[in-house]
Structure formats: structure tokens, C-alpha cells
Length: 403
Image (cartoon, helix red, strand yellow):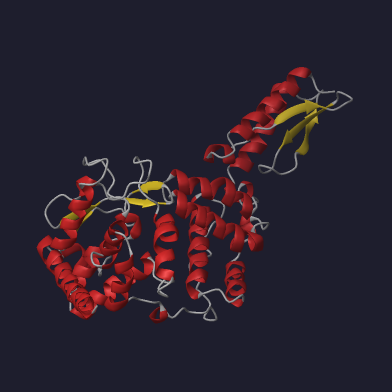
């Protein structure tokens, strides 16, 4: 029979091990417990070979030949060997448990994932990766198993980009496994996206012409026109346009973009850099006039506030409630902010705008040299926006005159 003190010790150890399971030290360290046989003649040691595995019992020796302290020492020696072999202790963990208890929590803890991107990444693991390899033990995972996941995904007709995202996710997972000593080598180093994956033709992605944009622009209210103009002519992301505060209009013809507003969360910009964007004089004056009508006109106020004032409008809600209903009757309800941002690049390129200026306005890189050592002045950015806006204005005037 186990003594009450031994039972209490065992329970305390189990609770401690469970409470600290997510820490690296707890995943490596286990102490075990000793007990006597029912006859009271044999010392036994109890331990868990890996977290979550069934408990094992090992005979340590006869009570007549060793004291309790000696039995404890013998078990500790066995545990030391086990704990010094991470490939044995950690490699036996199922991939699913590693992803859910180690990988995902660390991605959030290290701020590698924002809330929205994290939710998307978790869904990707649970939809495409864990159903295939989740029950395998980490140490049994092979490069072929990862390739099989990609081949199966490509066989379902998923796009090349979608399959590549899964490849990147598994590659990052394996790197973390190696760092945490669940694996001894990077089995994903040579992983490639299958050629059978269907590549999307980005040339077929729709873009608006200035004539189509004028049709849409004409039926919208000024608030929506301003948001559209910031994306189409100035190159902002919709999350950046709706994340603007009044104080971001820091000088005539220029806006400082330093945050994004996405699905109810304020975050840094997508590339986590603050940039200065040139704005055409007429658009800037309209923005200034719009801000003058707002209930909160201080620098801390939002340019596009919601009814609560303390938060901005949500772009998806604006599209659904105020934009699509008006564009639908014109057959232009395919226009959204992603279409407008693509159109910004195309329209400026056709206008002959310097590619570096287009990239700087949008917050994209143009190679290490161009992005690091060359900068476009706000004046040149503003001139580019003004030139494109002038073409739009001329088209608008011609349309008004013909009516």
C-alpha cells in the first residue's frame, strides 16, 4: 500500500508537471515518484516517459537491500538519462500537441502573429496540416510526409499561392521543432510547392479604368469618395485609410501613415513601417474640409469615425452598407478596395509615374537597393497624385458638360 505522504507527493508532482507543461523546462524535466509493493518488499518507481503518455512503473530493488533514499537516488539517475535525451522525451510528442501547446502559443507570445493573421494561420493548420500529420510523433516525421500534404492539397485544385502558404507554414513549424529539440534536423529545407498546383493568373484580376471610377465616384457620398481617393490616387490600403487620425495630415499635401485598422484592431502598418504619402492639393483640401465637419476635430480624432466616435468605421461594413448598394445598379459592385489598390499601380504606371514613387506611396519594397537607399520626396509624390487627379477631373468635366 502507498503511504499517504507518498500519494500526496505523487499528486503534487503531477499537478506541478501539468501546470508547467507549456514551459520548455517543464517539457524537459520530470522527477517521478517511488512507492512500495503491496507486500512491502519491493521499491517501485513511477514516471511518465513523455508528457501525456501512460504512466510507467519500474522495479528499483528490494526494501531489505536499499533505503528509501537509495531508491529515490536510483530513480533520479534513470530520470536524468531520460531528461538528457530530448529526442526521446520530446520527439515522442504528437505533432498536433506540439502545434497546439508549443508552436501556436509562441507565435502569439513573440508577436509574430497579429490577431487576424493568427486566426487565419490557426485555421490553415487545422484545415490542411493537422488532419494529415497531426497524430504522427514528431520524431517519426519525414520530408515525404510534408510533401504528401502538399500533393494532396494541390490535387484538390487549391491555388499555387494557397499551397505555398501551407508549405511556408510547415517549414516554419519544422524550424521551431528543431529549435525546441523535438526534431534533430530540418526536414523541410528542400520542400517545394508541387508543379501540379494551379497558378492563378493575376493578369485577370480586375482593375478600374478612370471612366469606371468616375461612374462609381459620382454616386457615392463625400465620405466614401475620400476613402476611395486615398486608395486609388494615393495608394493607401483600406486598413490604413480608415486608420487615419486628423493629426496624420501633418503638412500641406502630405499624410503620415503609421497604423492600420483591421477587423476591429489597431495595429502598425502591414510592413510595420511609418511612411509619408503625398496627397494631391484638391484631395487634401477636401480632407481638411471633411475634418472640419466632424464632432471630434482634434489631432486624436479619427478621419472616418464610427457612430461611437471613439473608433473608426469598419471598411467591410462601409462596402456592404454604403457602397455596394449604390454600385450594384451600375453593374460596378465588383469594385472594392483591393481592386482600387491594384488600379493605383496600373493607372500610375500608365501615366509614367516613377515605379519607386508608386512603391513608396503603397509601402512596398522595390529591391534592397531601391527601397533602402533611394527615397522619393513628398513633393514628387504629390505631383504624381495631382497629375493623375487632373486627368480624372478633366474626364469629370467632360462628363458634366455632355449632361
